[in-house]
Image (cartoon, rainbow, N blue to C red; front, side):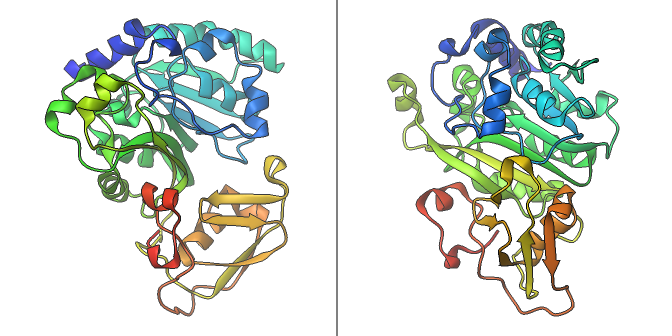
Length: 351
């Protein structure tokens, strides 16, 4: 491991014994969990919960029976939630580089197998660095969903992580993850501050840089699910950070051939048929696309494909083709955090 990796591993393995040891509130989840996640959370062991350092909700809907990979799984909280939601026929693999965190995760596998009533455990933990996923014998194109919770900011080579994630996903798969982003590029002196890095702040990407990296990795049209401002709540560190602003953002990135860089209008529409137990009344694709059951909604070509070329296809009815192009689609919102926080308009189109 390089110096940064050693410092991060030490920070999460030794310095932080539980969530009370955090020096800021950046690694805190600010969004209340939906019913299915809250119910799963109620069955997670206290030891695992006490060592949770995430900043968002990272488990999408409609994952029963799927194969999930968690990058930077820590003590395993999100892996065990996913274990419950994919069911006994699904599987979850967690990757982390910190021995102390992995020990907690592995010691709790049998507890959760018994709690969920499974004959065999469907969770496995692997020691590894998410910047070296190619060394872990994970099969390319084998995962339905990749999740991660406030970990990408801790990596030095974020583009490599995104490229490897894209390679590991099946066609039509998605990376659904939360992380911390900044409103401007972070100066090098702050990046060299090990406490700020460990607290998920100085390693945060400027959101436009993230969008560039995501598209370079193959994720053409990143979509914001949720975003909230992060308040550091530590006067000494706030003084160091100056005018930097931070946001906790959940993105979904799809591995779909044919997505375009802009939202284009082909005169298409979709209707949500229902069928997802946790989304029976309506389905929210992202923070600008909310589909009420039975209501036909106009969509851009990219949104059409995100529903038609993925596991979500069976839950929707589709209208129209790609035969005729009508120009730019003006019904989408932006995919940059501060826009959605302040309220997007049609003029913000660019998702």
